[in-house]
Amino acid sequence: MTGSFWWDLLIGAASALLVAWLALVVVLIVVRPRGGLLREALRLLPDVLRLVRALATDPALPRGIRIRLGLLLAYLAFPIDLIPDVIPVLGYADDAIVVIAVLRGVIRRAGLDAVRAHWPGTDDGFAALTRLAGLDRSA
Image (cartoon, rainbow, N blue to C red; front, side, top):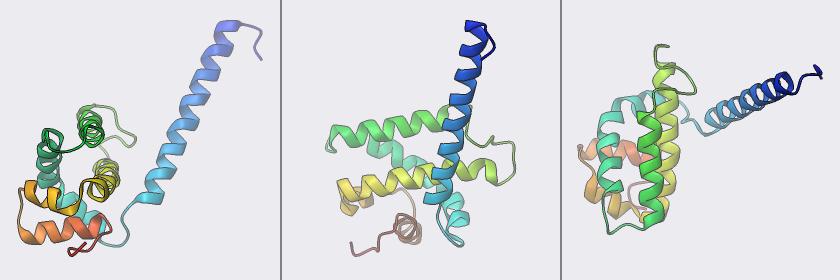
C-alpha cells in the first residue's frame, strides 16, 4: 500500500483493531437488555459484582464457569472499556451488558439454585436478576 513494511503493518493492525471494536459494539447492541431492564441492571450492578466474585471463588462450580467469571472480573477491572466510563450512563452500560451476557450463560450452566445461594441482595433484586438473565424465577 504505502511501500513501507512498517507503515503497512501499522495501518493493518489499526484497521483490524477498529473492525474488532466495531464488531464488539454490534454484539453489545444485540445482547443488550430491552426496555427498562438496562436501568435495572445498572441499579443491581453492586450486588451482581459481589455475586460474580462469590461464584468465581466457589470450588463447587465447574472450572469453566469459574474461569469465565474470573475473566469477567478482569474485564471489569481493566481501565479501558468499549465505551469509556466518563460518558454518562452509556459508559457503564457496556459493563452491565457484558455482565448480563456472562451471567446468562453461568445461570444456564450452573443452575439457578447455585446462583441463588450466593446472591447477596434482596429477593426483589434476585427476581430482577432472573428477568435480566432471561429466566423466570421458577426455572
